[in-house]
Every structure is written in C-alpha cells, then in structure tokens.
Image (cartoon, rainbow over all chains, first blue to last red; front, side):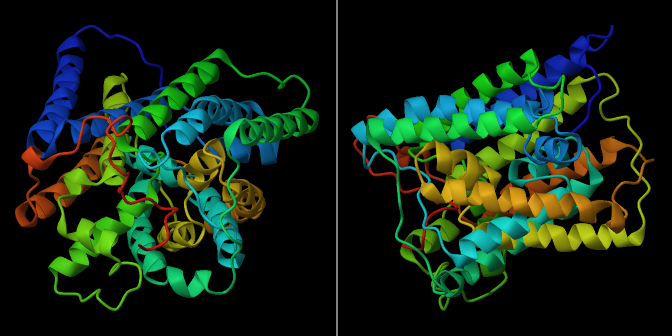
Length: 374
Length: 54
C-alpha cells in the first residue's frame, strides 16, 4: 500500500470533490439499479477500502513485520478489531439465528493445507484477500496482475472443493453464546500476550492510527453482518465472476457439485450487483483508488522494474491465493477475521496454518525477484 | 509509467465485470430485500467463502 501522506495541496479541492461525487454516484446507481441494501453494501466496501488503504491496516504486511522484525503492532490491531467484532457479533448471532449467519466451516486436511498455501502465496505477492484488492486499487502492479489469477483460482478451487473436503473433515465446531465469547476473547488475549513476549523491545504498542483503524474495521465488519446477514468475505465473489464469464461463454457447470448447487447456480444467473461479496470487493478496490487519488502524488509513483521470474511467480501465487482460499473456507478475511469473530473454530486453525505458511513465504519472496524497486 | 495506469486498469477491471454482467442479468430493484438483514425476518442467503455447496 502507498505510504504518501494525505495532505491538502492548493487546487486539489476540485479533484477531491469529484472523487467524493463519483463514490456517491456509484452508491446511488447501485441502489437504484439493484436496491438500497446493495447500495449500502457497496458503501461498506468503499469504507473498507478507504480504511485499509488510508490508515494502512493490513494482514500480510503486519505478519511479515512480525516474522522479520518482531514488530507486533499490526497483528495486535488485527486482534483488537476481531475482539471488537466478536463482542457484538456473538450476542447478535445468538438472538437473530437465521437472519444472521456466522462464517462457519469445518476443519479438515484440505482446509488446513489450503490455509498454509495461502499464507505462502500472500507473502510472495505481499497481498492477502483484502490486500490484493486494496493494492490493485491503489495501482500496485503486482496485485493488479495477481488479481485475475486470484479470481480464476477461486473458481477452480470451488469447482474441486467437494473432492478436497472428502479427504477428511471434522464437523463444524462453533463457539457460541457468552461462554463461546469468553473463550474467544481469552484466546485472542493469549495470542496478544505471546506476540508481546516475542516482540522486539520498544515495539510493544499499537500506534493510534492502527487503533482508529481497528475500531473502524470492526464497525464496518459489523455493518456488513447487519446489512447482509453474513460476515465480511472476499473470495466467493472473485470465483463467481469467473463462473459467470465461463457460463456466458458456453461452459456447462451442471456437473460441478459446487457451482450447480441451487444457491450458487442462482447467483450465477443473477446480477453481480446483488452479490454481497462482489459488492464489497468492488468497494474495496474503489475505496483504495479514492485514497490513492486523493493523496498528493499517490498515483504518480513510478512502476517497479521486476524480472520475468517475479511476474511468473505473481501469476502462480495469484492462482494459488484463489484456489487455496476456497479449500480453506476463506482467506484472511472470511476465515481468519470473520471466522474467529463469529465463533468458528476453523478460523483459529486457519490462523495457525496461515501464519506457518507466511513464515515460509517471507523467505521465498526475495528469491522470486519480488523485492525489486523502480 | 506511473500508478495512474495500473490504478486505472484496476477500475476498468471491475467496471468490465459489471458491464458484462449487466448486459446479461439485469437486477430488479422492486424485488430487492429489506435494507437490513437484521430484523428482516428473512433467512440470510448470500454466497460466502466458508459455505459448503447448498
């Protein structure tokens, strides 16, 4: 993500006014074309993009910072955001079962393996599920190249999902109610203590910027839950775009246990402007673009010069991000952030496996030529 | 070349996804669900990355 300061140069008012107007027009247009709920979801997505890019709240970068420099700030902010969501989401899910659903999925061999591979891939391209969208929106060419392959991988991962889950899975285990919330908050606190113990001296604090970002991220995630009836997710929408494209080009998905399932088949035939994760994904890209364009010089950075092997690695890692996140029942957003904050035990398994994969990924990245500069 | 090119391409990417889809499957705002799922009385039916096929 870009790091240029947000300031207010003379003559920038008209440009910034235009950016705000464009965002409002987009939300209004979706509301008119598809309905108010969907316009609101686009607005929530824009909020995610603005917070992620504007306040530099992320997942892959903070994990890298912890692994390489023992800097815990970003991870602590993630844990804070997850805890804030959990405090509100657990009671809501208990009192409004049916209207609201959590990010519940089973732990299994493919799930754990998928999270491990996702952790590797997200450190190679330095972009997770949300990060790839944010970085693409702010003009990062690596994420821009990875994004379409992320989508293709998500489609094929879903296509093969049942085969992978048949390798072996536990029943879905969900922490619920006050007891479940207490266990979740206790585990989050335990992870925070471990991270603080490991952290390098002088780094054991969360900057104000990240505290503000964590609170805003929690508010947006809860907004997503209340408006959509489901937690914040990313990868379903990416695969859906490819399924729609494949179908429009004549592909027959009736033999796919996943894409031919009634709910998914219906969504392939419906407007993308009524798909929850597609709308928030559009918003994340758009919100990151708004921040990058808002900043003085935010889009004037030269593109980096990278060797061919870096682009090949980006394409492969992009595909793996999509494929592995389907097997893992989500990425850092749908499984780690939303899974833990709504009580699914698979979120914790994802965290452990994804972090282990990240430890390998940060070591692979320099060998793939992705540390180049313009 | 600067990030203006790549950020513009990212926007073009999502506009392309929307444009291609709108031509084939128009939404109907008159059949839109309630503004908020919470309190709507309706079962959540959106696609999610953690959901098994159903």
